[in-house]
Image (cartoon, rainbow over all chains, first blue to last red; front, side, top):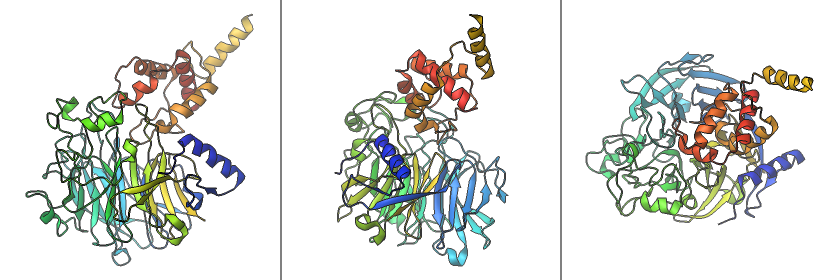
Length: 429
Length: 105
């Protein structure tokens, strides 16, 4: 493993290099490209995801505001506003935000050139209890408005009330990334467990899952054959905690997810149809007793620091003992939980030796002695794609931040959204 | 001897202070950047599920930090705030409260 530098060290290095007007070369790994950056947008409110059209037009979401589009000339049109917003051409009062929930992922249909269809993932009040929905929209040719709203998934669970857990407010563990596979053409939707221990292993709930559906919200062919009998046919994989990243290997189309760990072990997982990721935080099983509000997800000591190895023994994120056939994690962030949020493969010769490597982003969580860890890592996966043989910290030229989203633009540059309100473009030299 | 005291009182009133413990905003700024900004944001507007601190007065911030330092649960992020506040001194709390309440209106 390449040696990692602290967040603060990188901040100082980045600031020094920017002052000097020089590109930054990673010194954590000799094969890293030089990088420079441009801040594409700033002063946003919790930007959460981006999706590009072929000409560089960038759709982006803000968690409590809604969907907008940045045109190649830099102008921004506000398309679909959430409850309480102003300045959008359309406002949907049912779309709401709280805590980690709101408007999250955005995706462009593979046939966009013909059907001008896009999708967003958002919390909604239409149902009796709030749910997360996958909303299909048509974007007009002028890029000024969306229409034809159809909610193709209406029943992704949303955490309704606060509970006695870290980050325990409503809207927690809400998943929210949506991406099309370049191989099978289906839309993959990542969800969270809502701090509800019954959801991840339940075949009746869409919480704690990765869904695989078509553009109408119908189950992908093959899901039901792969999952246990009786499972909702939209479920592709189950036993997840809170998945906020999904991407596909550029050569094999193998889907990979990045997943938040339970005070230990953020995970990258290679998904197989019908696979169980092994997350089961129910009390009174697997050697555990009762837990606060029936959820052991931060136990055995949820409010104080302790050795992550001891946590892993008590409450594993991939419980291979209870579920021996569960998907084995590809990478576990060296046993630490630092808020791994998003993932994307870097492709193109401009990335040099990083061409084909997997970038994962971190929000950073400073708890119990764990370093905050705000950064982007570049993983070198083994040839079989089942393990990571190197994890190098990308020397972020803009400094550290809560990196929420990673997307590769059509020109091959890496774009990242930060909770601080910026979208940066990182260009390899 | 009265003049400096009056100046201090006047300055305190001018920035809307309600507490007699005037903190050092500069020290508070340094501590905020090190210990608070990564969750509450560089402009204290809040990020993700971490709340905005803007608009809170000094007395409220002192009160909250003292509660967290004492291990008292206040809200869903207490698990993060209690250990973060555990080692704050009275001066640290005063400095943070002064900085946050005056810088982020």
